[in-house]
Amino acid sequence: MFVPPHPDAVMSPWGELRVLIDGRDVLAEIHPDGVSSCTRGEWFGPAEEWPLTASDEPRRVELSNNDCVTDCCGGIFVTIRRRADRVEWTGWENTEDVRVPVPGDFHFDAARYDAELARAVADDSWEEPVDGVARLLTLALAESDCFERWGWRVYLVLPQRGRRPARVEVHFTPRGAAPVPGSVYVQDVPVARYVPAAEQVRRIVAAVAADDPQKTARLLG
Image 1: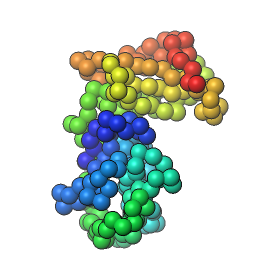
Image 2: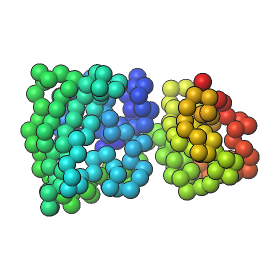
Image 3: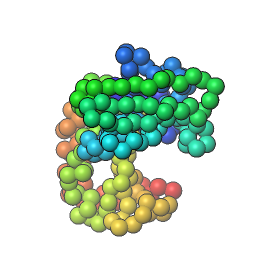
């Protein structure tokens, strides 16, 4: 299930996925001070690209971190693989503290596993207004050419709940340019608590379609 991110988390402002197995928050048990590496912002593409999707090819997946790069501070990893009608989670690793025992292997019915991932992605009951606007805006901008018509490319959408009012940041660069310092612009979109998220997103897309967003954006230093 997804939950709002830890209020002090800095690596990602998206909601974090908590891994519940037989009702147990496994990551909380073995990495209580960590944050989930599987955030809502990584679940917008097709199902085969979701972080926890199981395929015939085994994948080593990062499940949690210390709100830092795991090469630096460590985290929790597991290998995920599909075998016929089963999904296997094996080879658990705790690179943050090798002294902490890790779980044994888990085996899941593949159909139920896939259904649970889809259910988690579809569930928006945990969202605050800023999460809903960020999610719907991400989807709307993927379908719209409102930035492209002005020569821009959106490469990042981030919910930001740490300020009042909460806002969504839309990061964009000149089309065809890499997101490097001096080429990234940020459109700050305030989020209204009592206006439906879909209506706010409709207004944002219409405003960008009507005028070059660079005029009201800030250059990211």
